[in-house]
Image (cartoon, rainbow, N blue to C red; front, side, top):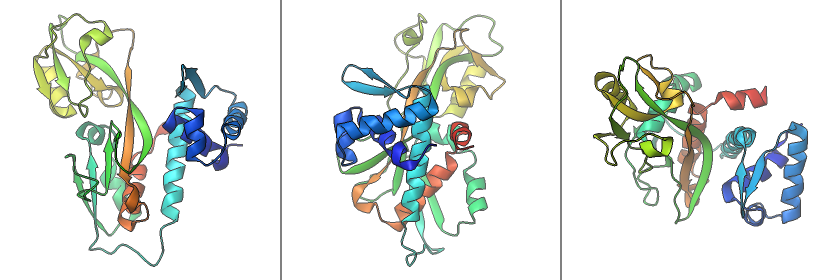
Length: 281
């Protein structure tokens, strides 16, 4: 049976990449981390981590398990919220979420808030506001800060694939670039021969999808988003994709802040995944 005591060791190894650093983060020794991960691997019957050089990488099943562990961790943290500090209807929670993440994963945001009967207010922006200066409470992005006193939790991932217009009669000669927090995809990475510079660069998935349907371009979209749009189709039969991790970030000094706790709960509630539901069933 999967339990949190084992899951937290998987989460530590995924976040830190090495047994030594994972052990330090949970204040245990390497043997304990290795034994706990072996225990949960045997329970599931699938390989969760594969070693590449000095770094451990999650397998497909490992990714699903880490997403589940992240959600459990966030909810356990939320339960620590001091009950004598309730948020009033005058409270404002500030969230900074990358545009393409919002368009892919947060379509049920309003429905989730209504379901939870949340009285407080939310300031949701796509702009990259400062966490250090409390311009935002929690940020959700494709990259984690390399410096600073931040808590970073990987809450999921997105598969990016090549798409063209479903009505294209000739394969495109040009491509458009979509901004993913500065992480870019080039046609040559997917085996397509095209100019080095994109004909068009766009922020946001909706406008990019419209541009593909109205013009003959190649574009790189989250499969979760583009597979739902009849006007788009995969640009190849191989189904090759590249993965982007999604990170939830907030400042260490605000770990016990009721606003941050509520923000974490909103994000995790909006990011329910089918994989998490399957593992908890």
